[in-house]
Image 1 (cartoon, rainbow, N blue to C red):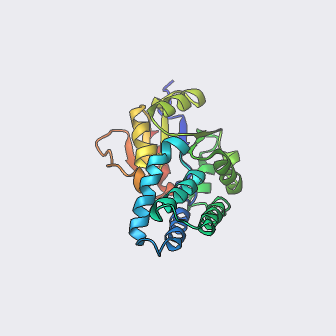
Image 2: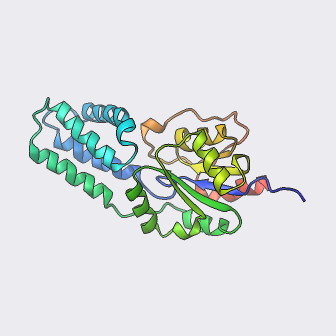
Image 3: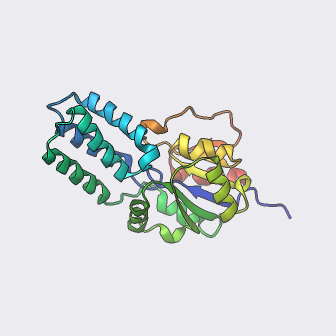
Length: 234
């Protein structure tokens, strides 16, 4: 009997299954408005990005780290003279971001329902544990997955470990996501297929060149086009 080439499919969550980055952008606009008397918005945004990158190894990915980076940036921009009322407002907009309703992206539910039972489906997402669990619960998609993996970072070792534990190893697995840096390139390095689904808003930290020469790299416009990729592999 011929062995199926693909048994396991991993899905990223933020900006692959539901909207995420657009809410960060709106929060950043509120933040730059708070400090408008101290610096231009592009300067504030650049300093915030520097703080986020610097703090990833301390706080990891997610809203809590983003909020702490906003506070740190406010202290730096004002040279330590940021009013306590501004700190309070930053905490408020951070809490608002944590409470934002989940907006599922087009074709997500239909695609997952069609694949459920045919493949082992695993959600592989990074970020704050409580926030990711909240969004998954509000999305109503949890029951469609065979496994949920919330990780601190995504690299080739992450995908080898998860696809070996959940499925038949990385060579018979596929990872789908909007981030080339986190979802696609390391999955390809692990030996899996990587299907890139671009989102109109992706954090600049996640930008890398498309690995167009990689034989297991695929790119689709939306999740509704995934069936065509899977049919070609079967």
